Amino acid sequence: MSAPGEDTFPRLLESLLRNSPGRPLVTAYDEATGDRTELSVTTYANWVAKTANLLLEEYLLDPGDRVRLALPPHWLTTVFLGAAWSTGLVISTDPGVTADLVITGPEHDGSTEADSAVLACSLLPFAVRFPDPLPAGVDDFGLLWPGQPDAPPVVDAPTGATIGWLDAAGSHSQSTLLDAARAASAGWHGNRLITDVGPSEARGTSTFLAALVRSGSLVLVANARDERWPARLEGERATDVLRSSPEAGA
Image (spheres, rainbow, N blue to C red):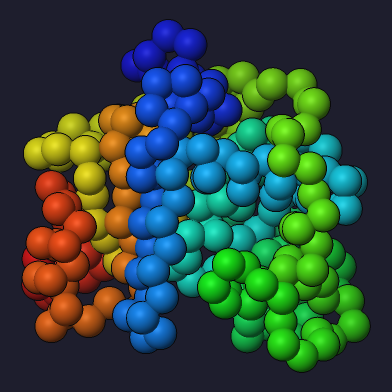
């Protein structure tokens, strides 16, 4: 069962901000580029606030509207999850789900989302803008986020029953998502997990939320290379591991 008072994402994040604002929450590597990004609880909450304001003010989304995430493993994915859940939006990764907004990476050309607003992320360091203009109908996250307020938007707080996820199996409330995260982390040895499973995948979503539920942290590795994995484990002092495939070495 959900812990009292922490049955929603924003309540859980508020608790972390009160109790351990400076500790690392999300650390992300991209083995292909060598980039490393570390977000403390406070920094993560700031990104969530800015992004939530963007979703509400730029796209006029309302609680219950659907956001489809089509991003690879990246720290921004965790930010979009937090922004959506803080404002009562519903996340899906299913291309068959009709969405009010589609969030993509740098490879998107906008040609398949004629009925949805499209927000593209360059996935460059510091979430900067694309170096070249995007196709018509595709917005650049790097241009939009810097002007957003740092304060969380004033919205009706989600409840535990607020839908947070939609997939082929149906809809899942925030309380259900957090309960699944607690169950997923029941076998953890500590509270610092390293993984190459993307946060918008079903397992990855539970893993990201589990880090919050356990007052721990997540180390996310994109384009993981097995030969570098032991060094990442040691360097990040990871207590637990989740790999994307059973064949991948721990």
